[in-house]
Amino acid sequence: MDRFIACWEGLDDPRTGNAVLHDFHEILAIAMCAVLCGGQGSVDMGLFAKSKEPFLRGFLKLENGVPSHDTFSRLFRLLDPEQFRAAFQRFMAGFSEQCEGVVAIDGKVLRRSFDSASGKSALHMVSAWGCEQRLVLAQIATDAKSNEITAVPKLLEMLRLKGTIVTADALNCQRDIARQIVDRGGDYALALKGNQPTLHNDVMLYLDDPASKTITAAPVVEADHGRIETRTATVSTDIAWLVKDHQWPGLAAVGKVERIRETAGKTTSETAYYLLSAPLTPERFNEVVRAHWGVENRLHWRLDVVMNEDQDRSRLGNGPHNLAVLRHMALNVMQKDGEKGSLRGKIKRAGWDDAYLARLLTMF
Image (tube, rainbow, N blue to C red; front, side, top):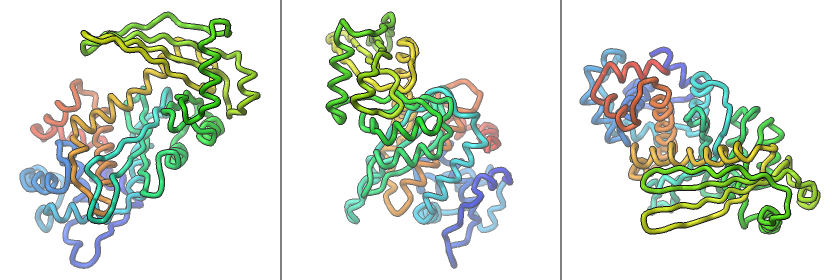
């Protein structure tokens, strides 16, 4: 329990007066256990505390019994989300190895976190996903007056980027973001679309011209889920003219990936263009672009389909933000666990097997 408490150093208890009936760190420990077992909100946390009281008393005092769902709801509504996010960063600093490889940046909306009565829009969480480590490295929420573009620079400040390749979609293909990544010792592979119209047009015309100096890798063919996808990557480093015309920070190469998808009744194709700050081989470029989709397949999909995040109706105060961070912590613990098996299977096992749940808690 001492190690668990150490994770929350600097996190202030926002409760006052008669509301301080249950120990602050014990409430957090129960909440973490509930999420590890598949709990989705304060009601589930209250039910978990009641049904697992014998297990919880094995390492918690629970001097005033187990907290109710109102206690959990009140705490997470009031808890400072910035302090909670900072606690997550400290947790990750001691929990994961040095960040390396591809770091994918992407945002996700918590669809049921809106509140029509108060005019509060749904929470938008922007996450940094370590593709090799398969861990959430950092996250930040955008407020009602902001958007993902203004959140990403703050997110990058939380990361050690030296030796990494940061990937992002076309929304975040911005000069300031590219400059920040390079200045912090990282490289980037940024998707390029119509929000940079002149640059996009120049890159597209150049890479699609057979006379241009480019290197193309052998096509990569993958078959999965009833679909065959063929990806062909092309890179050019002969872009001095492009750098001179556009003055894009750190630009060293441009690339494109042509994708052909075949299903039982349909064949589609698309070509995506990218800006690169490192002269990657087309083979490595293809790997980096493919790795970016891990943030969708291994993070967002798991949060929605396995942890049912989009159906969580927590809406009041700071609750949606704090519970999203709690889910990220649980996901990282499950990923770090050396046991084989799916995330869904590990969540079920944590709910059924007290010894396994206790072992997960020791990772804190």
